[in-house]
Length: 144
Ligand SMILES: [Zn+2]
Image 1 (cartoon, rainbow, N blue to C red):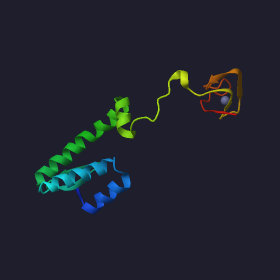
Image 2: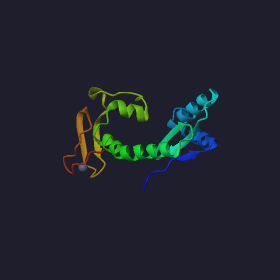
Image 3: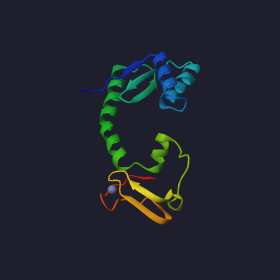
Image 4: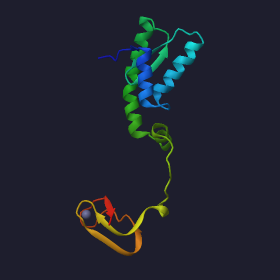
């Protein structure tokens, strides 16, 4: 079934933007809508699948073109997410990291406990996470 273009009432986009926060996709689209309206453009917000489209009310032909373009590319987006996702994509999705920890700065402890089998690994000097666990192969450890 084709994904239909659906008008979004202005107050609904406002609620979406308020709920998602000032840096969200919805807030960005609301800003674009307001700026274009301020220039006296007769534009509206539409939802197309997971996208928000800002533009004039499309003719039936334009609506069909948009719908077909969306249908043709939505499978591509899925494979990009799996195969071509980069650090830059991750930063775009969740923002800059608060802190980057190098290998040398990773958490060290004298005593690690395997979260799966409770095997205890002790060392005279602090060591990084001793994963995988020699007993069960688990990778989750806690200090204690
Ligand atoms: Zn274990």
